Length: 162
Length: 185
Image 1 (cartoon, rainbow over the protein chains, first blue to last red):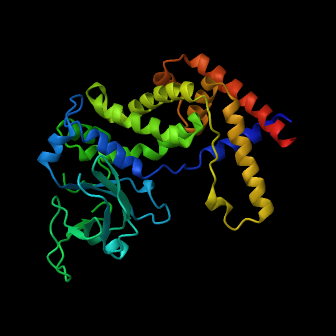
Image 2: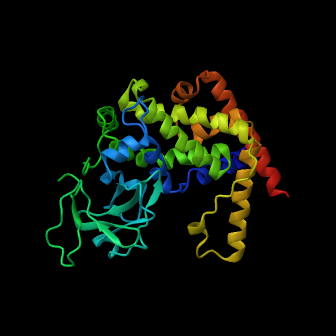
């Protein structure tokens, strides 16, 4: 009886250890809040940042376990665009067939963010602001071979160990 | 700013943040979001409150980053902030809403009877967890779900190891009882 009782708790533990999906917009909300503080421990106001960077974008790479465990070679990339005046922003690129509906960005205080898994390779991408305005990433190299004539950027994901 | 290298360590990221690179903090948020989120959801029992607690913990950690004495152990330091935040939230919210974590993928392809059984089990697990006293639930989750050592839990919570062991033992006993009761309903 004791073993059976212990088994039921172990079964419960296995259940509780399953991943819990957290709202991906949380990243943007956090980054939006801290964007108000330019230095740790020193709180500053949003207008300071807005004046300094009307548009500022950053792509960061995170651990692969954060997304899509089925594609073990993919790393999770967080794209962040600071666009306080935008009503909507989508990330479009070679990785999502340039479909704005597939990577909508979430906002908090004008900081837009989304995370996508990318396998090693070279990708062109851009931000689609308010559904009509294409913006390249000012923090990344411009793509020079854009056949559509719209601004876009390029990111190259190196394989592990390379 | 720009494109960060894969697998940058916590200590290096903290150094960059302290130097003014806000974007580096996004890496830490993405790195710890899911694991800490799981603890918050199970501890608080309400997803909305849990995500609020998680967000607040990340923001507090950023604003207090100068007080992170060992940047290589940023994760453990962040855990401590979240544990304290969950204690406050738990007391305020008093588990006003029940949590349902539906595992849609696990149910795909299951027969109706199997799906119902799994949902009942999930419900029983959440109910049992909710019936534990907060200090028992906290110790149980940190030890058995988050897989921390007692020494680490003691460091996070400020509680003694013997007290923590006692809480985990009693939590297990009570969970056995609650789950058996659910089986016979």
